[in-house]
Image (cartoon, rainbow, N blue to C red):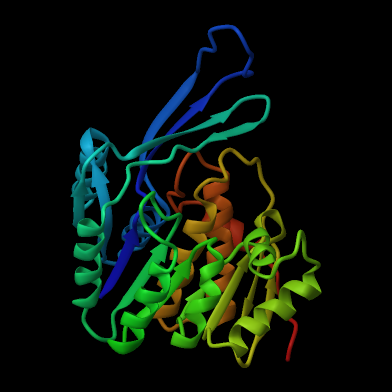
Length: 305
């Protein structure tokens, strides 16, 4: 069974306008409301690919109810913990440039966190847990280490997509897969930016320190995949970027879907990068209809060992 965990769920409000101007009423010509949060996005994409999963995390207020209702309409199992306050609403504006307004969300109290950890501790052995996104107020970053320890003890494959530097402290517990983007990888190792050679070197260091698989998402430059035997590089399809907010989540979900379908890392990465690009070219998550066409533009290079 596959579980996703989104501690800081959100609604994403997508709007489009000709230009965003100060001190005036800016009117949109398009808008869309989507249940969101990185783990929620992974749940949605997995379902689009026909893979059942259960969404865990925190929701609050009317906005939290919207997320639960939208997931359940799609027959995605939910097991959220309800908290005080309202789940955050983020705003993404496509105008003369792309603007992103990301809110904080409610404070999570220790009783709610303890309930979530109990649910994670009850996940059956050999399941997959995808823990994605930012941590809400009130939750210490070291919860990532606690969860990694639980998954290691219970034989649950932990897939971690987090910008927290505490990710490095989870490595002794052997997380199954880490998915930093290039900026997050640089931050993990105290760098401002990284060359491709440095990305590979740091990705290999993550493997040496305990991670089993690493994907480094690179936006329009594609992605890198690293494990103990393999280093491969993928280019990315070209197209008109509409909203990059969910692209990394779509990439991760697609890679997981192909991996559990026993596809090779090369096949999985090509499909994943095409799905991430398709999402970047859309208002929200990809509907998958253009994936075959985009995969024709994806080139995989083996960088060896």
